[in-house]
View 1 (spheres, rainbow over the protein chains, first blue to last red):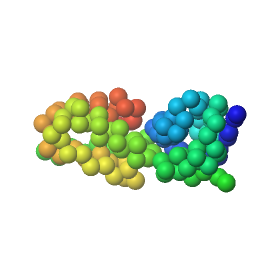
View 2 (cartoon, each protein chain N blue to C red):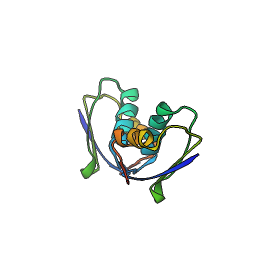
View 3 (cartoon, rainbow over the protein chains, first blue to last red):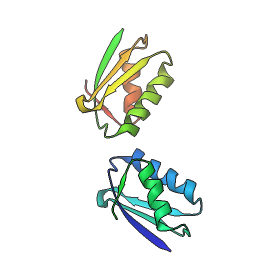
Length: 66
Length: 66
């Protein structure tokens, strides 16, 4: 199952790393790809509900579009 | 001894943390203050040569003005 999020506030590679780390804590099996220039975070292979993944991103200090 | 560097490329708090971590490895006794909006990194209390501190910042991927 692919879940794609529009995330604003990612400014650098550290931001990407922080989001990947946070998502890995929610679901270690998830594969995460981030395209910062497109403000896009794509999560593949996760059974976690969308809101749980979005919450992990928000807790790192980033905005997730509804 | 205060040493001040003009550093470009710091975009977020993670960048500040990465630079502080790198400088702490060069000199654990140094006190580092960063004003990102001013592109300024200030190192206090370090006996390390300026070039060693600048090199640590550059190794993290940031530009240090001459």
